[in-house]
Length: 99
Image (tube, rainbow, N blue to C red; front, side, top):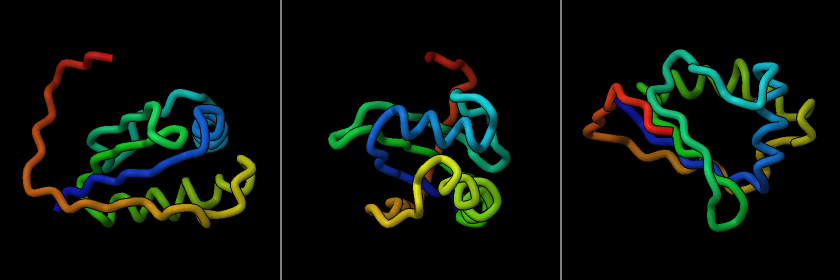
């Protein structure tokens, strides 16, 4: 089952630092299992909203990429608000990229 993952980050700089640590660039590339990746200004900093093909795909990314990169990017751990996970019954992905 597809899931949406919603994560708040303190700033755009925190997002870019973490992304650069994981991928060597501040623009996140396509990642296996991630159907949609978005990032923008949120109510308390920046917010990432992703759609993953499954909980297992997200867990693999968390374990293999995100968690190991956090200390190097200056984030000790995920002691802030945990990601919100929403099980999705329906996902439509338009092939046209608009941003």
